[in-house]
Each structure stands twice: as structure tokens, then as C-alpha cells.
Length: 128
Image (cartoon, rainbow, N blue to C red; front, top):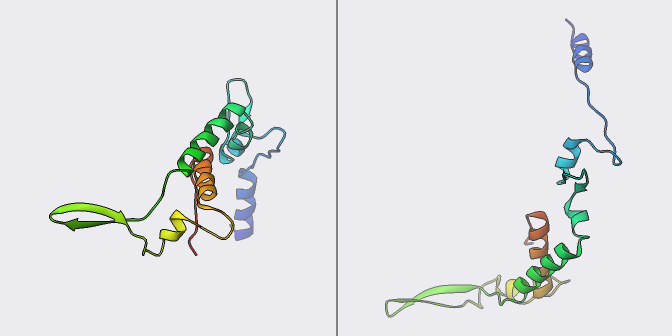
């Protein structure tokens, strides 16, 4: 069997079902992070946030986390006891406690990160 004949036979055996946005197939719904409910409606993080209850819960949680003080600490031993103190000399102290980037305050940054973690199960920040 030639390579061309083998490719044609594989192509005939394999069918890929088409899908669209109006009526998506289950694999597309699952890939996009949604799932059908008992009523048949598709729920995704993007359309679930339109519910005032969920929006208010995530906002309350993310603002509560964002207002907590955040610092870098170092653990030291003095007189046989472990103590902690703010490690303001650390390179990341200013990024965590005050200004993580040129566009956001520490409050806004931590609010967005918590919001994303609650809604999408993950949040990432790249250190450059």
C-alpha cells in the first residue's frame, strides 16, 4: 500500500463532527470550561458572573483579601526563640506590599488576583 493510499483510508475512517456557537457539542463546552445544567443551559464563568449573588460574593471575598496587610518576613533566632520581622530589604518587598506594577496599586492587584482565582480557579502574575 502506498503512502497516499494509506492517508486516504485513514481520512475515510476518521470523521470530525462539526460544531457551532449556537449549538455547541459537549467536547467544546467542556473545553471552554462550561457544563450543561439540568435545565439544559450552559454555565461558564463568563456568564455566571452576571448573577448578582455570585458577583457580590466574589467581590466581597476579593476585596477582603486585598485589604489585608501583605509583607515579606524573615525568621530569626534570638535568645533561643524564633521571631519574625518585616524584611523590608528584600527585593520583592516593595512589589508585594506597595506597588506590584506601574498600573495598579497593591490593593487592586491583589483584588484582581483573588477575583481570577475564585472565578477561573487560577491566577498568574509574571515577574519581569
